[in-house]
Length: 270
Ligand code: KIV
Picture 1 (cartoon, helix red, strand yellow):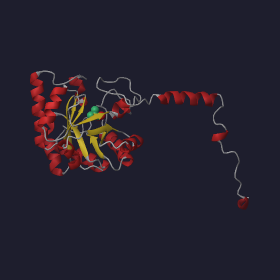
Picture 2 (cartoon, helix red, strand yellow; picture 1 turned 60 degrees about the vertical axis):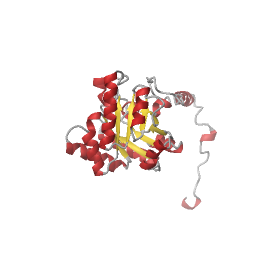
Picture 3 (cartoon, rainbow, N blue to C red; picture 1 turned 180 degrees about the horizontal axis):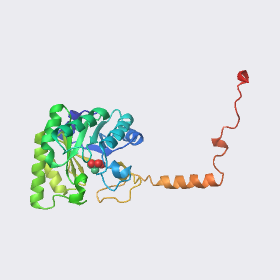
Picture 4 (cartoon, helix red, strand yellow; picture 1 turned 120 degrees about the horizontal axis):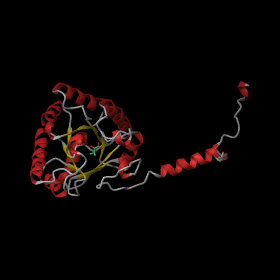
């Protein structure tokens, strides 16, 4: 497994970091087999695997359940688990208890928390030994306020994002995920920060990229954001299921190749 310092050294060596989401045992196994640097157990699982409209309904228990399966599927990959909506921002003690629970019960290597207001939290977690990845720009847990659109599109907002990025780094964040921001701003932030900046919808000049598994494999996704590139097509599953359904109805399945032909009789026990 790549360590945090190895991942951070990628930035110095100008080697890009690859990150992908995974939410279960098989997707985690695939990501590990593909030698992806970091797996994110994102709260996007609310949409991709639980069928919610957004990430807000995802609970701490959901995250733990899925992250444990991911860890089993990818024992040798650096895993980051999202702190879901309501898992932070309640009170200092509650927030820390949830951070400990997520980190301890999932065996993830780090937690990820959305928002610039969490500098104190990042500091508290770091002091407890919990590495925190910060997530700025478009933060889907705040979608009720921001909507799904590019962030930091004017000069003041861009300056604010730059300040926030420095503040989370200063607080102890070990990496930063930057979502849906102009490419030139993401490039500038990546240049100014010492920690790796992983972009999603943030152009090519960040220190790494993250995409959602279901988006890049076209797996049950109804809407693709502009920044998603599709690398595979799992919608072929529908064709396979349709064919299976037809063969069951027509008694073509199971055929001789998929049938135990003779009972094996145990002479001694007759
Ligand atoms: O939950 C998620 O998948 C994420 C990525 C979009 C970065 O936070």
